[in-house]
Image 1: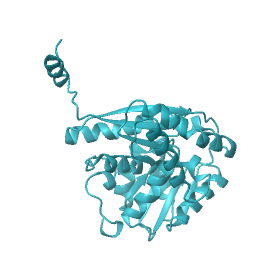
Image 2 (image 1 turned 135 degrees about the vertical axis):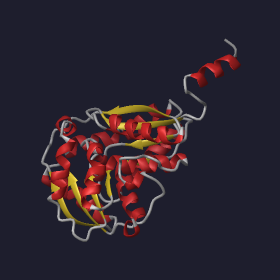
Image 3 (image 1 turned 180 degrees about the horizontal axis):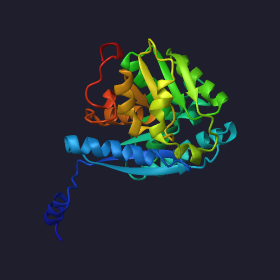
Length: 271
């Protein structure tokens, strides 16, 4: 088959040279990021005609403990080298708490390590992390005060709240679900989130973080909670999606996942 006929065949299958490759670095026990992000980008594709593929590298993590989190962070460079072999257009480091456990602002160092590893491998790419994406997206929204849900034990929940407050955003209220096993976090029922969110003290907040964890399923509840509370609702996964789209130069056009991804970003006060 010559190049012309090959190109025609690819177009007939809906595949084009404009396809963006998205690299993910995820914990080995993650079962959610590789389901929620492809669904979000499927909706983006339907709305815009843009195409996306996903390419993952995994780092060992079973229990959300300080020791395992630190070990995962130490493997970020190796994972970046592996995933960059696919010549990806952007890399997302998808373990919020692993980065936040290293202290306020640690996303900047983690992202720099990943970017350097990809560049040294001959495939430079822009990098985001779920930790960095969450705080930067809240800042871009103009959110000064938030309420939040996490799946973590109390000490990790406090650490996440402290990290967000270290970025200049007040955490008015937080509910932690106390689940230590990462696989169990991935089995949590997202349809329970609206009733959990309703218990938050959200009076006067600018936004609600429905899932401060890329492993805790939340996509099925984001729009419902946003509609019920009348407030912008984001998650670690939707914030990461937002930054991936920005890195690719694509305008969000994703329905049913909150106003953050529905179109041009509006400040929380004006949303």
